[in-house]
Structure formats: structure tokens, C-alpha cells
Image 1 (cartoon, rainbow, N blue to C red):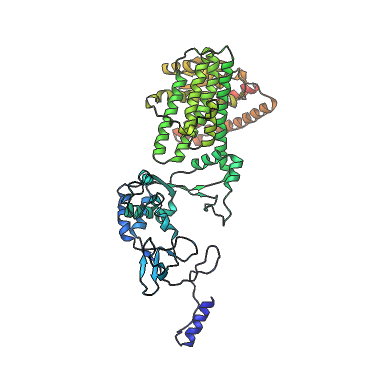
Image 2: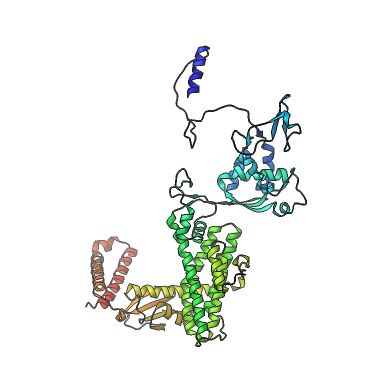
Length: 566
């Protein structure tokens, strides 16, 4: 401001000032100091970028370098097609000083990596290089690269240039990614990497980048102390879709913590069960053939492994974690382990074989989750291997896909079994029998394949659904009013209402529901007895109202049966 005032005064003194007037314009403000940025013309050093950009553009658009996701190629192309010369000089106190000297007498400019021999006659330029100038050389300079020619004896350079993958954020595509490609092609005559993975940027709940200035960045050490290191790592991968940013809320880390706990508890159960089996003489290791449960879980494992291979090969890291989450939590823990408990009881003489198969499966799961949860998986691995210190999961082979074990038919049958068990559980809950295990259930089926399916899963249905008697029929008894029912795909489930026992609070709830249904029925009957409605409404609407009346009458009858109201 002072400088501008003095400039105006000088112009007035010399008679060069035409006029003064106020005007509104954009004023640049320094981010940290908040001071007004004053423009200043000065000499700078530039690099001519146009010729270097052309081969770099070609390399990406011809597929020599692949972007993940591909949409960032458009961003890259925009920058490279409109590239400007690069100002590489900076007026800072720190950094790599520009290798340029000026002769003290002649003013000659000397630019080499080696200083002039008569250094006393030269003065080095005080400017330093732009920080990205050293960064763009990184893929090869860290291996001792010299004079822009690859040293044939440099084993590290031969081994790691070009490298396979660059993982970075999309906001520095031009600052770093594009410049590394240009430098690699210019000085090494090869692209520096084959794939570029643009990872998510973690933002706060308002969509702002994490920043010390804003104070919106949680301390990761505190988060890890609270939730666990693997929990935080897994959660961030799980929440980060390819190429999209993540709005992070610390409470979301519970996803990872709960998942770690689920996996740990599954392993603890398996090891405790193995110890119990080995210490009890009633259990044996008689041979047992693979059954439908074994076929299903191995099919699901390999279906999941197929998804994982696709997702990892295509840098869909969050899809990798979601595939594993679904398989481990839903298939392995919620269903397979629950079935395993009953399978061991039903096959005591083969219990050793059964638990060993389950642990072998669990070992594969631990290998699959290791990239996302290295600490927990390493600890579990040692427990599975009796604490042997010479073993580490990190040098084990990743599970290999066996496509021949993928069996869509067994997966489809198990889905029916799962639907059936869930349907029975819901029917019990709806009728206040959620925890009661001696209830009677009828399953009506309508095909030979359904009958075969029910015979295979009969014992597991009884155990997992918590029922005492299971009757599998093609026809129902005539007194259908004595049952509560649920219709599923290919099956009908019926529950004996006389098994329902209500306390006073539950009875009052059902009586209230009964009154509401009776009022609703009264409204339907009035509508259906209204001649004006019957004449004007379409046949479809009238039939719909009649259907509602029929269903309501059925519900009323069942509630009266449950509550004992006549």
C-alpha cells in the first residue's frame, strides 16, 4: 500500500498522472499470512515443455500407461494439450540451488551439473529449483541415474525402472504424474510406470480436505488407539470407491472394528472347538464325504476369490474389501459356523475331519484379508500354527482360484435354505415365539426337487430355525385357521397357533391390532356395499378391495385364535 501511494506521488511530480479513480477488482491474498500479494515483474528460468508433452500424450492415449479410473485421461489430455512453459526458478531460502553461474567479468551464463573449474570467477544464481523439478526425476534419480543414460551395471535401476504402478491423488496429475512421464521419456527413453492408480482423498464431513489450518484432521494415532490400526486401514479402503473422494466420519471406523472382532471371534471359536474335540474321546476322525454345506461354502469361497481377483487386478480396492466383508460376515460367520456347531453334533465320529476342514477354510480367509488387515491376520496366523515364530503370513502364497469348485446350483439351494430358515424365524418372532425352540412347523412344498431339497436340509432347518417338530407335506390339514403362515418362493410355512403363549402386555398389543383391523374391515365393507362405488369403479379396483377384505378377515381370525377372543 505504501509503495502504491509513493508511486502516485512520483507520477504527480513528473506530470505523468492522468487521473485517479477507485475500482473494484479481485485482490490476491496470501493463504497463511493473509497479506495482499503484490505483483512484481522479474527474470525467471523456464523449461520449454511443448516438445516434451507430445510423446507423453501419445504414451497415455496409446495405452502404454493406463489410468485407473480412465476418466482422468481427459484431465491429463487437457493439461498436456494446453501446456505452457514451466517456470522452474523460486526465490526461497531452501531447496536445490539452480545449477547456473554468471561470469563475474563477461556475464557469460554457464549451465552444467558440474560447477565451473575457475569457480572463483563465477557467481551462482541464488534461485532454487521448483520442488516439482526434483520430483519429476524421482522414478530414476533415486537409483543413481547419471547423465541421462542408463548405467548398464546399475542393477537397481534395471530392476525398478520402469516400475509397475504409481499410486497418487488426482489433484497432482499435472504437477507430478505428467511431469514424471515427460522426464522418463526424455531422459530414459521409456515410460516410468505402466499403471497409475488415483486413490481417494479423505475429506471431512463437509467435503473439505484435511488440513492443519482448518483443524479438521483427526489424529490417526488417537483413532488407532481407540479403534485399532487394522480397523482404521480396513475402513478407509472399504469407504473409498475407485476415483472418488471419501467423506470421513470417525464413527465410521466402527465398521472396521466390528469386522476385526467378528473375524477374531470366528477363529477363537474354531480353535476352542478343535481343542474340545481333541480332548474328548467321544469324537473321532472317521472319513466323511463332502456334503451340500461343504460344496456351498467352497463354492462361495471361490466365487468370492474370483471377484477379488477381478477387483484387485482392476484396482477396485474397496470392492475387494466389500466382497470379503460379505463372504466372511454373512456366509462364513453367520451361516457356516452356526451350521458347523450342529454338524459336529450330528457327526461326532467325524468331528476331527469336520473341524480341520473348517480351519483350513479359515486359513484361506486370513490370507485373503491380510492385505487389508496385516496385524490381526499375522497374529491369527501364528495362533493357527501353534505360535511358531519361523512362520509369517506375509510370505505365504495367496489362495488360488479353483473355478471347478464354483457351483451355482449349490449356492442357489443354500439361498433357498437361508430364505426358509429366515422365514421361519420371522414367523416365530411375529407370533412372539422368537426364543421358543419346541414349536411345531409345517412346510408345504409343490415339487419333487423341493422335496429332495427339504430332506437334505431338514435337520439343519430344525436346528437353525429353533423348532421342535417339522412336518414336510404336499397338502395342508383342513383347519387352516389354526395356523399362522408365511409364503416363500416354492414353499409355504405354517405355525401352530396353539403353540403361541402371550403375556398380558403382548396380548394387549394384539387386541389393539385386532381392533384396528376390525375398523379397517368395516371401512372396506362400507365401500363394497356402496352402489355408487360399484358402478363407477373398474373391475380391477373392485377385485383389489375384495382381496383386501379377504386378507383382513384371515388376519382377524388368526388374531382371535391367538388371543382367545371369540
